[in-house]
Image (cartoon, rainbow, N blue to C red; front, side, top):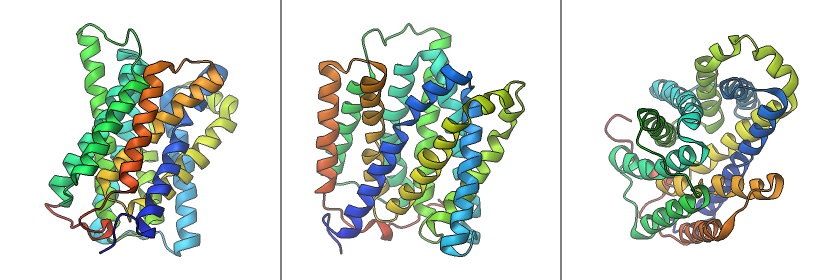
Length: 310
């Protein structure tokens, strides 16, 4: 039974951390796209999914020799694709209703908690006290990084709707991770990622029919290409590879490097102020990651059972 320091688990965590850093660049790139190309978030999401699906399916054919998904995992592939598309739609719809800080706080901080709960219910994972402590520190650190002065809002129907959409985004991501963890027991990572992103691309394709979509793509294609190639296809490929050797609950905490990266880029590129709370949040995230790297899981992640129909 491999311990926490086993090369496979350490490699898996590092891959997940690298993916999270890559995801953390999407906020900055999307800000540029909106400013320079007037791009709608759903158009950006649709292009990202389309480019990523093509690359991942091509990579699966080249590396794995097949894009075949195990028969028992085909419904999981559809569920993952729908969850990925739902995340894009719910998160970017929540932002104008609650504001960027509140939407990000709710979506990103709720997903690790939901991952731990769903992994315990459906995968049989039982997080150790160390992982639970890392989870608590990671969520607290993320809250400090994202929440700023004036983030609180009145409980108007508009605000409540935004909160529910942001919670839907966190749940969508949690479902994606847990279903992916179950599917990886039988299906290779690249075919799985390519297939579910193809489903997500189909689900978001109607956004490409917006009257100004073609103009947005024409003006912003270099940044959209980066998002599809690097921050989506590349990031999810290495994330899926890392997830084979890491419990879903630990992966959820490690992925909190995403908001840390986004915050640091905001400070360096857009002149945003991190402040004392942000520095404390960054420190808590690093402590959480250190706890994960030295944790001793009860069983190897690759042996996590598939239970209750997941």
